[in-house]
Image (cartoon, rainbow, N blue to C red; front, side):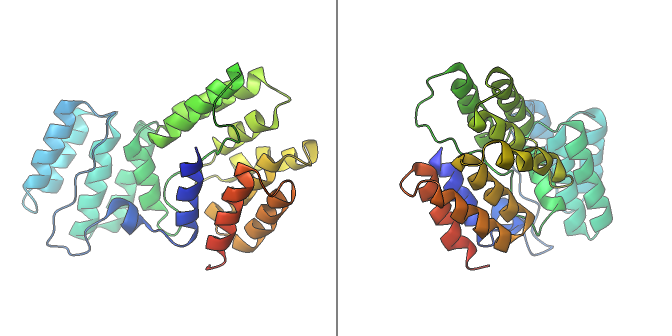
Length: 255
């Protein structure tokens, strides 16, 4: 679980869409295929074949595959990449928005969100648990949500976090996880409107300050993020979360 926080530290110092997706910078290069375990093998095969045809007919073939599989995000994400390289950024953004809409609980939808927000850190902000091994039902649900996040399954992660919050209404960690799981780059207020009040409800909960700082990094508000992370460290300088907060503080000073 600490790995997720270290990944967040990396994005805090300027990891961009290019480093996450390795989008080719030269128009002559074909779009890269990004494996998506949620996509059926026949869909992935058709997408690969369309990409191998680059540049002749790739966009047309991908549009055909997209029409054949209206609920698949992988096709639409790759179509967006092809359209961008072809010089049609508006059409690319529309394809990425469709990827998010038709299959939000998929790696391709997460990558599409990254593509639509190239100035933001890639991926979803991770929930970082303070425990190493889950001991309660709520903690087991939180650990499940973390695994879903690592698999780029944000909807499944959010559901697991929400379930933990329901069975542990007085556990700040469960409540924080449910808030973090709501983060959306188009609507960050969904997470902040739930996370913010937890500061008053759990004024000395390190997890609240830590994750508030983390989400502020994703929002690009680095000065305020550092303030929250310092408050997190002040709640206990030798805890695992404090160590992760220190990593983020050092990284965010470069911004």
